[in-house]
Length: 215
Image (cartoon, rainbow, N blue to C red):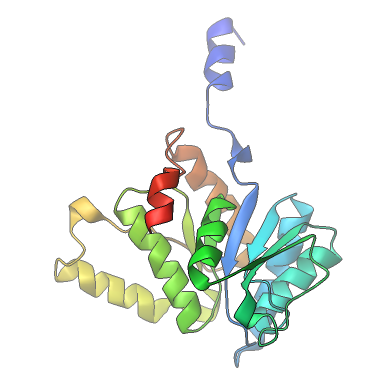
């Protein structure tokens, strides 16, 4: 290897950009046992790769499955939950960091700030709302953090069809593309996030603090 090769490698984007991943998912288990299995597997993968989990702070459903699995395999978990949901979602006290916020707005802002990427496991309206918000911010050029659908047993296919319909009817225009990743297998999630993060220009991951405060 000559000096030129060494210099080029030193300036290549590293795979270490993904250190913390925010996972949106249901507070229930759903009807398909593969959903809980997928959440449990993803938690194990995060722990084994030194990736911290940011999530909604509860101990029920898929939220509880991924958090407990991450902890059980020696990983780090950051739970962020609004005070009015502590009892309803049975906040998981054993996480390394449990942040209680006064409202949903602060919860979502902190989840954004503490994360390098976002993954949506199966879930309901709350999961969809959080996912779409990140896609909207990304579409408007406010960040370049990867956003990925964990398409376990095709759960997100109806949403992908809707996005395709929005493109076909030109409500999603080429100048306002929606950059969303998809993984059919849980094992492909972290490699996909790392590959996408490596392509993002340096310094484009974060929104300016004054913008975050207004959102």
